[in-house]
Structure formats: C-alpha cells, structure tokens
View 1 (cartoon, rainbow, N blue to C red):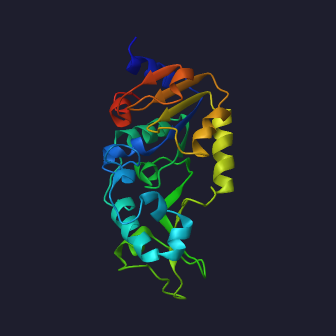
View 2 (cartoon, rainbow, N blue to C red; view 1 turned 45 degrees about the horizontal axis):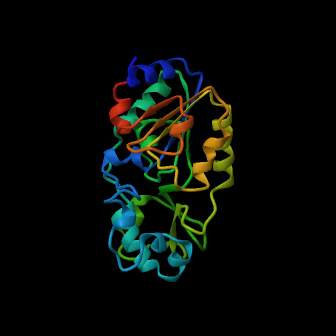
Length: 240
C-alpha cells in the first residue's frame, strides 16, 4: 500500500479529523511562506520582516508596516487550491472535520470549510483601534497609506496576531479541544517552528498522526504516516 492509499484508508476510517495546517498549505495558491529560501523572512527590506510585523513596529511606524503588509501579506487575488477544496469536500460528505490553521488568508472558508480556527487571525477582519468599527480587507488594501476609520479617524488595524501579541483565548481553547478529541490529526505544510502554535499537536491523544510537509519536521518521528510532498498535490488524490 503506497502513501496515498494509506492516507485514503486513514481518512475513510476517521470519525473526528483535525487538519492542522501552516504556510505550506497556501503556497500552491501563490502565497509566499515565511522560512523557505524565497520566503518572506529572506526578502530584503529596510527593516527585517520579523520586526515590521511586530506590535511595537505597527505602533511606531504604521506607514512602513502597511507598505509591507499590503504588498506581501494581503494576497486578495489568491484562490483556494486542492488542499483547501478537498478538505471542504470531505466535510460536506458528512465527516467531522476541523481545520486549525496558522494562515491568515481565509482560503479554507473561501473553499467552503465551516469549522475553521485561525490561530493567527485573518486579513479579512480589521478594526478601528479607537471605536472598534469593522472594515473588510478591500478597504485596507485600497486605502493609500495607513487606513483610517471613516467614523472617528482612528487607525484601522488588521485582526492578525503580530509578534509581541498573544493568541485569541477562545480560538486557542477551541483548537486545543478539537485536537484533543480527534482520532486523526493531519499536520500539514508547517515547519512546526512557530510557538505556541507548534506545541498544539502535543494535545493529540488519538490513534493516527499524519505528517505531511515538503521537508522533515519534528512530527515525523512520532507520525504513523509521513509524506514529504506538496499538500494540495497529495490531497487532490483523495476520493470522497
């Protein structure tokens, strides 16, 4: 039995499936990851990307923050790939599927997944830091310079988790509960280098762990199935 057949068997027999995904899930949609050779962290900017997407930098230099954020992190034209669409298809078939994602692109929801926990927030939710008015991604993307609230003039901030900020408590507790109750956990497209999110998989108590990534990760040694390939390419072979 090859790896695709094994994965098919695992998904077919799963009662509660959690898909824990990272940046590698969206690279096939044209969204750059962070740590690969051509990822965001290896781009040459006036400031290091890790500094730009920090809370303190956003407060001190919102113009430079938004120049990078709009250019490199707001990929509004991106469309779901085979990974996103297949997970939504599996869920529509009646399977109990929960997606826990480190991505902020909203592509899982765009593909049709209903149960999605976004650990690092979403580019599609934005709010005024003074009056809390809500704005969509198009408003932010199409505003010249720093987006300002049309109601009070306050700065509009994306609801994404920047460095120095904590994860949302409800999202964290919901994701951890889903992982702890799952019988199957698929960890895909993540280097498992970003904490605290990478530590979430320690809460898995189920029977089958699948590790799916282009390169080796810390999950490989304890996984029941390891696949080193593109996530969308692999999932496109799964029959529902």
